[in-house]
Amino acid sequence: GRGGAGDGSDSTCIVACEVAYWGGWDLFEEDTREPLAATLDCLIQGPEGLGIMVHEVRDAVREASLFDMIRAKGLIIQREQPLGEDELVEGQIGVWVLRRAAILAGSVRGQSQ
Image (cartoon, rainbow, N blue to C red; front, side):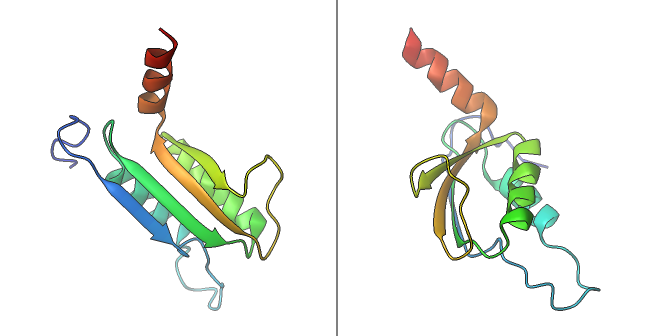
């Protein structure tokens, strides 16, 4: 269970660096995307929960599918670096911030009032 996570009494910052890459060296090894998405989902909780993900793009299509899995868990992903909307290409280093979708939407509503 999550044991009280999300009640706002604790803050958590998760830093994940170079965890998106999987070389596929062995076809019989478990794919790491779903366990990574589940772990981030479990750890990033409540209004103060925050994740920072940094990695070098090595397989843009595979890494985009990881982001889809993370979004399906209810997390918002915002790219901080490099700025812009262009898709990153192999060799670029990206920095993304992850937060709970409902928390982000609530903070935006609170700012507009």
